[in-house]
Image (cartoon, rainbow, N blue to C red):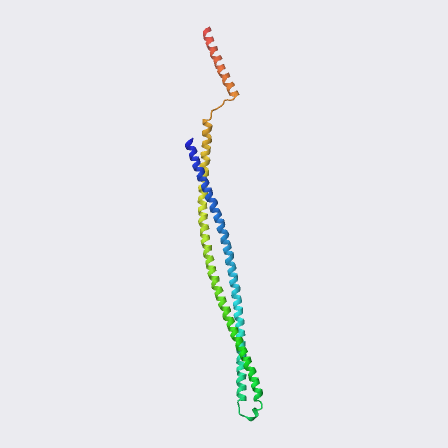
Length: 229
């Protein structure tokens, strides 16, 4: 009985240990699945953000090309007007002497406008350069973050797969140990029943006595019968 009890305790310890391992692995698997789902959601968000960035950059660049072409065309027009005016008023013809004062005012106004347009063009180009650099850096950061998250998803998915396999084995071991433990408990129960002193019921004792009396009576009758012969 002692040997059986020792075996039972060892199996109970093994049973508890496997159950704890299963609980731990199930909790870890659930946590990994939760984290992987969050990463997938973050990846989808990154993809959406990058798509919006691409669309905005494309729209901004298109507007930049239009504005730049328009500004350059305006500057070229002003330059042409200045050339024409300067050439015209540069002639030594006396008829133009009287108009030279008015000419300098017009030319001065055009030169200021040209300077304003040139400054505006420089600002447009600088803004485009800054926007492109910001887009490039943002895209690079998104690519790095996307790759990191994809790798993280891969590692977690691989670990989940390993846990699934380990859980299958652990549950199989748990089922086997449960059956073994049940067999030990059943054996112990039967052993106790076999070793326990049996207490006869009143009816059993009465029947036994009646049977003994009947046997004695029958024996006595046989002896009397033989003596009478």
